[in-house]
Image (cartoon, rainbow, N blue to C red; front, side, top):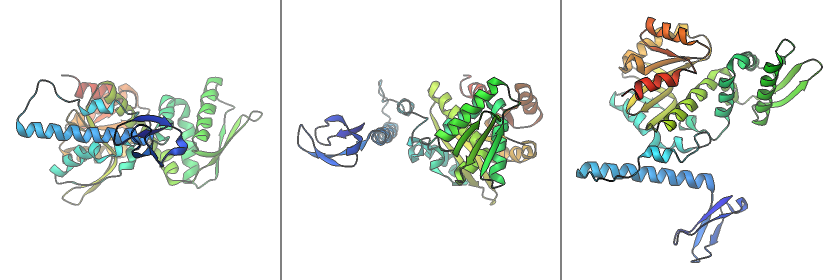
Amino acid sequence: MALFWCNKCSHLREVSNSYIGKSVKCPKCKETSSIHDTTVFVENLFNKLLIQNKELKLLRKKSGNNPKFTTTDETDFIELIDIHNTTALTNQIQFEPVLKWFQQKNIKTDIAPDSVDTSGFFDEIALSIGDNFTVLSSIINTMKSAHLKSYNSAKIHLSKKSPQDIKIIKKFCQELYEYSFVARYSFLKKDQVIYLDLQKAQKIVNFFNGIWMEWLILIKLLNFFKEHKISYSCMRSINITFPDKCVNELDLFVIANGVPICIECKSGEFRPYISKYSKLRKKLKLDKSQLLMCVVGLDDKQTKGLSSTYDITFVNESNITEHLKRILLSS
């Protein structure tokens, strides 16, 4: 349903989606107002409240006024949005603290606000992969290889899979089709083979090439912050340029409870990058606990051992939130 909101008397009512974008007279005061898409209306309201709240905090800070009862913090507004289906995170108010952090270090940033737009289906597919990575890893590798070789289709053999694994794989492939990540899905029961016609859109190609893990970790972080009522600012896929002209791409960068955290996501070979991110941590002047290399499939023993060996912290897709608890909630 869509929403009618009267700008004069504040009369509010639901109307059919067919009226979105049209202007009609208010049944109470006869003032003409527009019909809004419900999701867009709520997100715009959220952004306005967030801006007003920050402005009020700034005014109180300047005046030295510290009333007993204060306005709701921005984290309360964040609780109002569906983090799995929102464009609210693309608003500059949300990621401004991240930009300021880099500006203070004289580091230039090139950001892509849409990289945290969760209104698409990238996060849903990424969560499906993360929940069943042991079973689906071979499927993801097949899709990745087919895209890299510019094939039009991919074939998945199920004859050597267990019944439970077959069920998981078939459900996942059906989900890929439902969300249009593949153009066609068919299962030949006799041959125990799944055929997938590939989509050639670059975002889909990039997703199977490893970007899926960035989406997985982003959603895990957002759920963690929401659960623990942690104030945050986040961005994905940031290009930074140091004063010495050295350029780096950061997978995820968040400031949570005032703590900056850089997360590099690896779904494949990670060892050649250890030295690179060790040097990056020092250039960013982050504590060892604040630069994370998140490697999918590593077990807890491996992440602990690697963290003890090198001067960055290793985590996996499952224990990353435990690490965040230690550095953000230990006090």
